[in-house]
Length: 162
Image 1 (cartoon, rainbow, N blue to C red):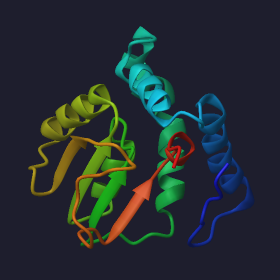
Image 2: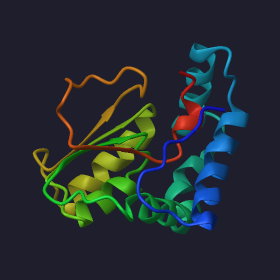
Image 3: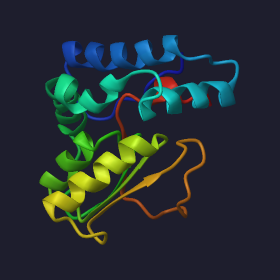
């Protein structure tokens, strides 16, 4: 499993929690076949394997908020342009906006997750010049170099083969 580069200070328990999430994702993937792994991830997070994907936020809200808060504890995003890789339904995206990021671009491999996030952003009244969500592969994102001040990713690296 690839190592994680930790920036800032993080307590032992929180570090173990974040590592465990990445390890579970890594174990569940097929690291030898990138395309098969990506197809499996898309199927799982688009709801092809379980109707429970519709309850993603309900079941895991507290868990994902804890991870997002831990991830952002030592990062100043105020006034910055931020990329949220593997945004899911936007728990980290909204945490970034709450912390006064100037703009958040959120990307995820799952069309379903991005659709949910887009609806949540629209309902919350965030215009596209402040927050936008798009479908994108973490290994091949469609952004120019030097666009973002901060890039975050929560619970995704274990699912990114390369």
